[in-house]
Image (cartoon, rainbow, N blue to C red):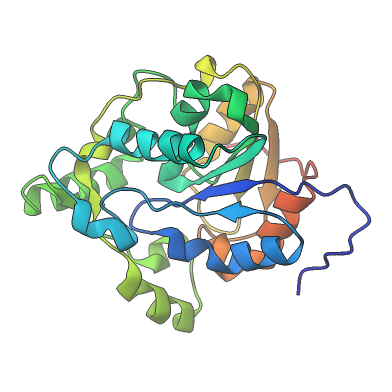
Length: 251
């Protein structure tokens, strides 16, 4: 159970938590409940074509669609001083979104995910083996979607969690991995925070290193890639009480 009486300074949000590929707002529920129990305001938008919005998928659903999902959400809710969190793929989404509406962002957090520069393409940022798998999956699906990766490939070992979550994963719009990022790290007028999950063979170390060169706070969480489900207490505590936990930057 999260200790909500922690004497450390608490960040009360509002938090906007953006899910990664194949997921939906549902994956944030354990963390959302903990943050709300601590008195925070929490929002968990679902990106177009995924989760409860999978029925909205079209061939035009691309990276800019997802960026505008987040920007429009922040604007329609008139949110200010936001802690904007992007997990995995969503680093490609929240980074340009924050660059477009920096006046609404108090703190940008990339959770074990991409931290792109303008002009980069997600498919080119993947490890070679993963990129080949994604391209093969998209080709099999007539270029429309990329099938979910097994949760075991993301470091999850708990069989019950794998059985519970796997049916909830939805195919991801392939175009998002082929579109160029329009606004990236160097377009941000402020530094952010990078959380690297070191409890699995994360392919995202290079982005933690990139963040480090931009004077971001870079910290390590001893967790697998699905930390929001497998260890929500750890993640919620860090979001509420951000503390620098140095990362070994050696490859």
